[in-house]
Length: 446
Length: 152
Image (tube, rainbow over all chains, first blue to last red; front, side, top):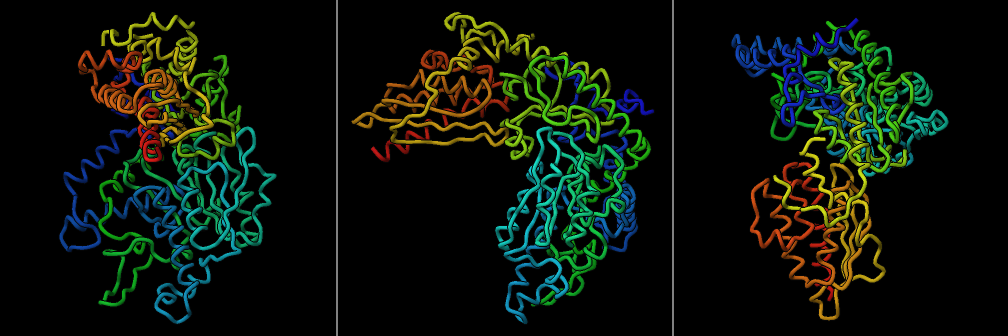
């Protein structure tokens, strides 16, 4: 069994204090995870010993840098059950999702152009056929999406004339199977989250993939919330594309990944163009490299990719089954603890079944911003706001929420401090109103 | 609870957040502004009606959702500027922005005095993430006044 106290000792930042000497209780891993020394050292070592331009230059350092960079690709691919040429580096998951959407857009623009013209020929016939969208086609998302897996598809629909449709969300924050019928013969793309970053509900991906397969739609999975919190095997899930970010996986910021099935990446038109992704360039035309390099224009985030390797090694050493079991226990403690605080409502499933340790909640009569402020004063870091997912908040009848999210290093003591903080939130904002005149505004002894 | 929270959430702020002045929709108005704080989704729609000379705020009303800081700030602002000249309202808005940027530094006593209850927001300046909350209503006022004056 994973010992969170031992794990925590690997994360230097978690040893610091905040707000006048209070020990930090970090419950915002859903936004970004803290980094273990092993990841920090990997970046430090890279810059200290190995830094050079990759995939060019014949000197020894360039060779070593390229090796480290590509070894990370192999490790990250293995971590999610993919092959190394199915992993494309991006700056984050948002860019990965845009890369796919823009690939579709570029194919759609070419498909809509007069056959034989340069505009039409800018993309292969196979790509125009496969990825070209037009009026009458449909893109299906869900109401639970993070804006990163909603806005690019809205944009793609608007630009191609395709229609955006969506799977609904139940009262307890799960994708509603009653609305899966929105996937029809017209559906070309199904873009869904693996788990909601608000309710923590894990999506029944096999059921949705089965439906998508029946109608020949591509499946794009947003695996940001799941990749660091449960075993994820993209090949077994049989999705076509998937996106995830290193920074949520105890890895560096600035690097994320797109997974794409090899035969799909073969045809997908590039998103960003320029150096490093080309074969032959003349003044009026260019041929592109095969994937994954075709999608990696310009100098890449090499040190961060190397740090990402250390991050997946770290998680693999803990064991993703162990991580999932530990976080399930934290979910239980969070839900049990919250249930002891009057006036607090959890937005999302009330049990630990198919659910991550991402717990959004509202406190009766206290705005989430104010909840977060009082928790912060106790050293407890949570997220407040709409968490880049406005539609699901609207669906659940709130404008915003506060959210506690756990990680590999979350301890029972962290959850206890959070619950104590929630009681304090209630106490602080339940104070009887004094007469206004009694307060002396500027004389607060600041 | 630590003093820091008492200083941020002064009683006058909590009172205004509960009993909000000027909340409600104006049917007749010369200028309107919608402001949103994109980080938390808080929003306000503020309407303002000037008098016949166009120099005074005859009426203003606001609707919206937000945290206690943003709601209280709107309420206090309503108390301060309703019936005042446009010029005075803009001046007070300037003082309030100055207070938010002060981060603990002292404002001229005359300006603090002029801000009345709004000076209670001095503690907000210590929390950069909350300054936008306190300024939301004032931004809406500034914008609505520009529109109302253009139409007057």
